[in-house]
Image: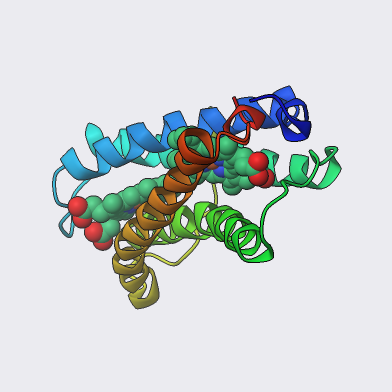
Length: 176
Ligand code: HEM
Ligand code: HEM
């Protein structure tokens, strides 16, 4: 159904960043769930190395996305109840926060294991000292927050599909 919102899309760069993160995250969850369990003294090779590279890429894309969010032109507001708008807004903000904080915790855990990370040949700083108890503990929080994030993604996708299939109001096309 054509209406006022169907024309008010997110700009192409915002859409590109949105779907790039979806693709990176899908790959990241598959890798995280199939990589070997990490024990003391292990080296980051194979799937673990891929997990670290994908994770740092997600942080990098999210930083660009966050900056873009402040400079871009916002699409028009979706006409719906204050409650649903509030839930959608809160979900988006939490996703932004989690998509930066949760991977940083994984990075802190990697640092506490003495793993040095590099991104496109550039050495990245350690976020915690080798052997750090905090860095170790953040690894557990990192794993737990991955589930919280998945729950939020589920809520977000359910909302998008509800708009598309039930309300048929063109909200999904704002990001398509
Ligand atoms: C959004 C991005 C990320 C997601 C969704 C994610 C997801 C996960 C999940 C689900 C686990 C638990 C695996 C298991 O125990 O079965 C895990 C573990 C881990 N991740 Fe990530 N991760 C992300 C980014 C990163 C980044 C950026 C780094 C480091 C640079 C990283 C380093 C680690 C490490 C070291 C572990 C093992 C933690 C431990 O067991 O002590 N992750 N990750
Ligand atoms: C990894 C999964 C996903 C994440 C982390 C995510 C994250 C986000 C975020 C943070 C926004 C807010 C817009 C912004 O400021 O950039 C957004 C908007 C949106 N997303 Fe997703 N998204 C995911 C998957 C999906 C999927 C699978 C769909 C479609 C089924 C979808 C549909 C939408 C739509 C339609 C909007 C615009 C909502 C509006 O008009 O306000 N997203 N997404």
